[in-house]
Length: 343
Image (cartoon, rainbow, N blue to C red; front, side):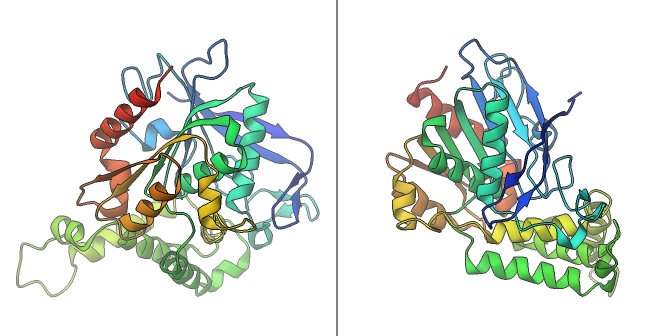
């Protein structure tokens, strides 16, 4: 069983947008032992609505003899700001009002996540990260970390991500925000506010994570005479009901805005120049049917990062393939690490 740990930063934490959190709590999980040099670290940067328990949501990746071998490495995953899994977020108390933040939670960017987890790295006495690995918005964070603190990341695995949130990404996120704000209960500033809208937002997201082939296959009807109660509709309703039991609409709004903020080139000479500054040995892995982050966006990353390797994994699962295709991802990264030089 995984036991959570917490780091409390009791001083103001400054945000990229100019605001600040008067204090910051970070939940994290870890497996394995830190070596004497404090550098046998694999840092997992989690995806959109995941949490710090990477062993639970990425089965087959962490443990003795697996890609993230806990007999060899110290593996850590920290929950991101604004989420609802232990790190400071919208349902926490706003010290200025004594009430939960709800809609007033400050705007968070990917660079804020990096600064928070860099602070945690220092707190834990980790000298450098052997491998920073992340999928989806976890890829955003790992990329930014390798740019912002290049001497701290030695190897980098970027999976199913891109250099900046595309107009397609932002349009999908806005559709989800529109669904949440169309639910008038969102304005009530209660823990379950906007839940019906959140169900719809989750349905929009799930469709973007998979492929038409996958949904056509798994939700196929066997009765050609059916005129209602279709499997595909029931599937989305079921997934929405499950989701609102574990997430809240205020964190979801924070996460979609965080997603939109991703832009490697912001405030820098260019996107290409920013990627060219990465000194970590890098592998970029794409899912060939990913419609959220098409392979060409990841090919651009691999071409722009000096010496980066590119791998494309065949999958029928679309973007969600990065969570499901454990064996081919393991093979790609294991080969990459064997060539880059492992601990």
